[in-house]
Amino acid sequence: MSYDHDTGTANGPVKVGDNPLAPFDDNHGSPAMTVDDAGYIHVVYGGHGQHQGKQIHAVSQNPEDISSWKTLDNIDHLTTYPQFIKKNDGTLYLFYRDGIHQNDWEYVTSTDNGRTFSDPTVIASAGKKRTGGYGEDSVYLDSWYLRFRKGRNDSIHMTGMYHAHGPWKTESNLPYIHPYNRFNRYYMQMTSEGTWKNAARETIDLPFDKPEADDKMLVYDSGMDYALPPAKMAYHDVGNSNASRGVFQVPHLVFTTKQGYSGFTFARWDGDSWEIHEEDVPYGPMFMRSPRDIRIYNSGRYGGDSEPGIGVYQSTDRGQTWRRVEDMPKSHLKRQEVIQNYHDDAKVYAYTPTSDKSSVPVYMYGDSGCVTSDNNPSCPPN
Image 1: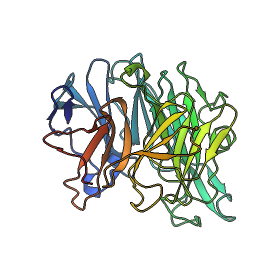
Image 2: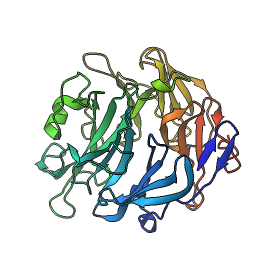
Image 3: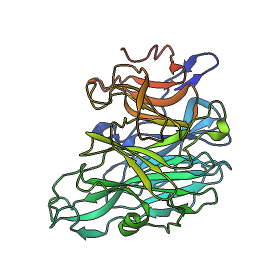
Image 4: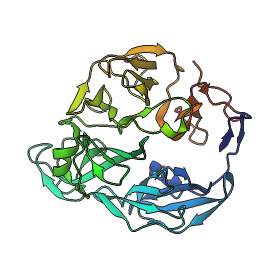
C-alpha cells in the first residue's frame, strides 16, 4: 500500500508477488523494502535458506508507483532475513543470513539502484562446533541472529544474539530447545567511512566469530537466560529534520532478559563501558530528542496487567528511571518496529493478533496518532 499524507488517502493494497513460504505458514518469507535514488521500490521476500522457499527480488516498474511489479533474478535465492539499508550516496546494502541456522551472515551492495549486486562480504562466521558453556556436556554449533539499522550520520548499527544451535536429534543435549537457545546481546557499527567498530571504537575484523564477539562486542551476558526478541535501538528524533533520521550515534538499547519475556534491560554506552539498568524498564520502539529525553512506546505486549504497563514512557536521567507520560491504545500492538526514514506521522508499524490469518489489522502511528484511511479507519480499540 501507499499513503499520501497531504490528502489522507491510501492506494492499494496491490499484489507484489506470491510468497513461496505462505503454504508452510513460515514467516521467514516476510519482506524487506527500500526505495532507491531513482524512486523505484524494491521488495525482497520468500526465502528460508536451504530449508524451503526462495528469496525473490521484486521492483516496481515505475518510480514511486506501486501498481505494477517485475522480478529481477540478481540475488541469492538460498538466503533469509533480508534487511535493506540505503547509504546517503545511494548505495544499497542488502544484509541476510546465507542459508539456515549454521550458515554465515553476509551483505551485498549495489551502486546502480539494485540492478546488480557485489560479491558477498561475510559478517559473522557460523557453523563451528562447540562444547560446554551452556550446560556442562552441551554440544552445539555457532549461529547468529543479527539486526541492522541506519545511523543518522550515514553509519550502520548492528545488534545481535548468539544462537547455540543443536545438531538436531544427534549430539545435542542443550537444556532448552530451538528457538530458546539464544543468548547474550552484542553490538557494533559500520562508520560512515566503511570500517566496522565496537562501541569503544575498536576495529572489528570481519568475519567475526564467537570468541571475538565475546571479547569486543558483548553488551550483556545473559548466562543461561535466553534472549528474545531482537534489541530495540534508540532513534534520534528531532522533529522535521529528515537529515537527522536514524539511530542515535551513541548506542542506547532496550531488550528482553530473564528467560525471554519476563524482564527488560536498558543499556547505554557511557564512553567507557555499558551502563545497565534493569528496574522497571519498559520495552518497545525507542526515540530520543537527547540523552535527557528518551521515550519508549510500550504496548503491553507481554500482558496488560504486567508492569510497567501500556503507555508511552519517558526517562530524563539517561535510562535510570522511567515514568508514564502518555496513553496508548489498550489493545496489544505486536511486532512494533520503527520505520526507517520515517515520516513524523508514521514512525512505527505494528499489527494486532487475530485468529483469522487472512485478515490481520496493520497499523502505523506517529506524532499525530494512528495513520487512518478507508482501509484502516482507526487505532485499535481502547
